[in-house]
Amino acid sequence: MRNRISILRLAPIILLALAAAAPAANVTVNSLADAGGSCPGICTLRQAIITAGSGDTITFSLPAGSTITLTTAELLINKSVTISGPGASQLTVQRNTATGANRFRIFDIVSGVTVTMSGLTVSNGVLNGTANNHEGGGIFNAGTLTIANSTISGNTGTGLGNNAGGGISNAGTLTITNSTISGNFADNNASGGGIHNTGTLTVANSTISGNTANNTTPGGGGIMNEGPATITNSTISGNTVINSSGGKGAGIYNVSGSLTLTNCTVSGNNGDTGFGGGIENDGTLTVVNSTISGNAATLGAGVYNSGGGSATATLTNTTIAANSAKSAGGGIESVGSTVTIKNTIIATNTATAGTGPDISGAVVSNGFNFVGINANTGFTGGAQSNDQIGT
Image 1 (cartoon, rainbow, N blue to C red):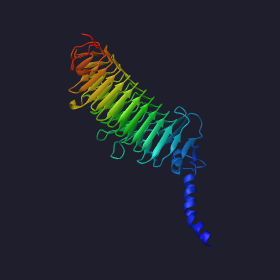
Image 2 (image 1 turned 120 degrees about the horizontal axis):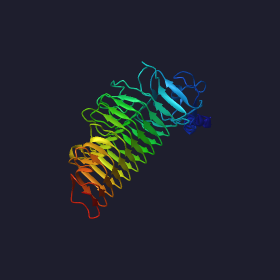
Image 3 (image 1 turned 30 degrees about the horizontal axis):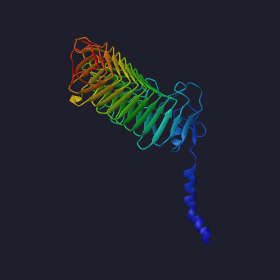
Image 4 (image 1 turned 135 degrees about the vertical axis):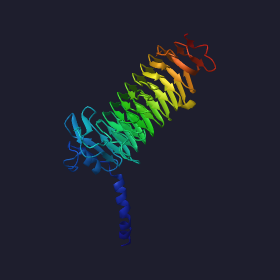
């Protein structure tokens, strides 16, 4: 009897241990419908997210080139799951494209969960600019999110208090690898056409291109960054800021964060009447082994470094070339702030007004630099003997 009582007392503990040891399950989506069904059975993506337990993986058994069209509302993810798609060209998750369709983002990841998404395209999320519906046209992340081998394209964030993120708004921890963020739009005084980051951002082996921030004083056609961000082996190209009075950072606007670019290309971004066609830095910027070329703006077509005098930019083993400013600083415009260059080429840039075609403002040389035209350039502490400076 005594042994039986002991076993009964241990039963709940044994059951809990067995539950904890249970392997993660796969939930397979086999329906293109927005909602309904059951998993297993006729399983929609929305129902799969509801059915899945923490740690489970959602997979897909659908024809190649399938599109899941959402008609009702965003997909809320409030548990730690993996969504493993067949490939960005094989599966698209989008909002209904019909005229007058409800406006909502595609995915909303809440705080405290860890989510991995791979192998899918997220498209046509559109926000309406209300207090609870203005950040992250494609994805809003407040948790820990990894996006791999995916495409985030054709989404729109609508501004409210200068916040948006047409493609993605990140307030948590976001890692993007082997992915494309393209053709997204931050509208109506919104920022971050491709990505708006207020959390921690890591981007690797990815392309951020053709995104737009429209009618915005802040800016960030490709990325608006307000937190720690690291970008490696990636391309930021063809992004745009549209503003009649001057937007900021067509490629990247680093507002107050710490941004590091390594082995990156920042090219063909257009700041129009604004500042920083490639990059505007008002925080801390480190660029290593990278190329900044073919960008356009009124001031600082390659890099505009300001931040009210508090910004710091360090450029090492980097090429800044063929950028075009309407006014000054075709390559770099340094406004009362600190720019340090080492083993860097700054040449063949232009400034229509003739002020500092390559560099306008003061820079610090740590040696081994090549600067094409020295007009309007002041080397704080003087150029190094191993610098090559044109006239």
